[in-house]
Length: 120
Length: 120
Image (cartoon, each protein chain N blue to C red):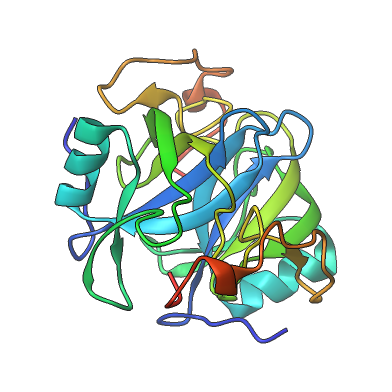
């Protein structure tokens, strides 16, 4: 299947295959998608750092990708993953730990200062 | 909470609150977010048609938004919705009805020609 990369990137929705929680939205270029499929571990393109990134490379909190789905327009991916540890650089299991009014819906799983030297 | 709109838009991940299936990825501008919060029905910005769009305005397949979550970077939203009918303009319940090799994971719920004059 030919994916439609906009500006070289596709958005990737990441969902925990077991809990069905949406964990994060990330971006992937063609190489990140290829490496994800080859290795079974989620790879992304970091727009802020402008480089390829293996999720968990710093924190050890890898994502094992169990299934990859593609949307109708072939411009968005959905990764169903086994999340090791916390998906969010804040230490929360999911990046979506607040409602739109700022109310906290979940507590951090870990203290991020223990696993990150820099913000992932 | 101040959202970080990139080029005036934020991506919105849409998840069925009951089934936990991820239904689609859409985009919203500030007005679409405001209208969604005011009315309780999902509104988006159509990048192809360059206009505000109430999901279901043509098909009748509205999305009642039960909860809005925001991610750590405040640049992505997650809508937990009650999906009426099919989310996808192809007639599928979810836009993610194929795996990355093109294999179909689900059959359409409806014949889209019965509800759409134009592609939503």
